[in-house]
Image 1 (cartoon, rainbow, N blue to C red):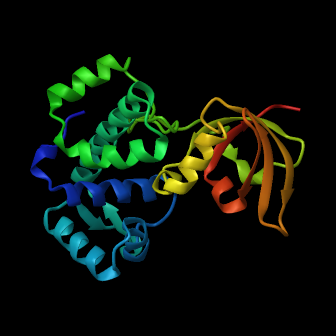
Image 2: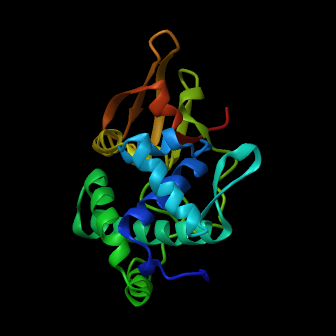
Length: 228
């Protein structure tokens, strides 16, 4: 993918904000200042100041209705950052053996220090993965399977296969750790045992036994239901 500026020219903070906006947009959430601040765990003022810098650099712009958007250059850089982040996650999680949450945290620290040569070698070493460890496509041109639906919408007794854990959920370390501990990763086969709107939770049987999830976290897990 050809990008308009080298990633190395961006500060680690700028890369984090571009990646944050990409995650929000990919999850269907408007990248508002408040949403960005919550995800980055900073004050709205701090988020606003950084977004102003990214706008001045031509990486963030206003879309229809004055919503914040990534510019074309910002999108290219954000996709490139996500690609490097995903490759480092694969290395840390599947090769070194770190847990999902720790691998995500460390990948954020390392993603900006990788040169294009190291990135290419790492990609080849890992066998050219098409997704991140959580199942989200690495290529900006790839699209998730349209047949996938949120786990939260499945009725009791439904069998399904986990396709991916959404990019929004990738920002929740506790959720990532829980899903990994219960074996709820892409490719895992599950059965919904109970789905309660009143309790706002559901229970599934998975590779490592029973697991309970709130409906909001469950909405961030995309699955392929088995045809009945």
